Length: 387
Image 1: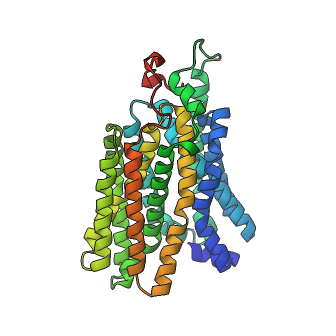
Image 2: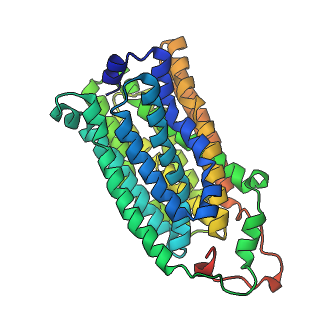
Image 3: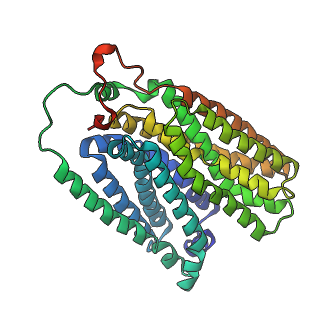
């Protein structure tokens, strides 16, 4: 519905470009604020605030009378998404320390389903409101506000369960180590951030350019849209399976390689014969796109406590989303310069090779806290870590 927004608010080309680039920028900026907020107030209440920001931002931007107001309230909604993105792995670690893969798979699958459903029905819903983009966009504040009610109930439950005083005794070793760790100085953090950023870049490239690659090679717009839907649909069931596999393995590197090889085969197919084997290439690229759920699972298992996961999640996603910004722009520039897609696909392939290497290194690396110092550390059962 971007064309309707541009026409009504009279957005210039630069402003429209800023609007499409805003998600990654806001995720990087606001995601970095999540750790301090969560450590000070608790992640549950911060996620509740994030859901309210999403709901109110979406609602108020639909009534925005001007371009600055529209951009501001869009940023408010995106800030809530950014904070929620960072803290969901933290809550999984905090509430389900022995089921990280299963729960991560559940919420990433739900996320994929939500994305697919909204993409499919947004235009019909808008048309049901007479084509008024303000109603068509504002209606999506309702699910966020409903979710805020659920999180409010969860927060009140957590408050009742939380003891008024902390138990006596030494701080658990894992929490003490996590409190001192600096993700900027951890090789695991950097490998994971590069992996996360490049897979996000690949996702933005796919959503922004893949349908056009197919249509420019002779396929109809409807077929190109269907192929993009296949890419997104393939990842839905695998988003539940892969986190379970990853959480059970001490080394996630082999999973990274398998997903990466599928992506490389898809790129080779786009290079050689994008139209004739389009269905196969779409399936392969869909399998490769499951790196998002894999990266979130790795965030949850690459620290020994929820304190460490807060720091790692904020670092990985903030740095990662900054890394993701240039990719889609470069693909578009290369296409404009060359008039074809060969150079763009070559760039996508080179980026994927770096992504595979970074993901392999992140998967084989240990936790960000390093090895537990000495046998006298008395390791804490995983279920008690971060409490």
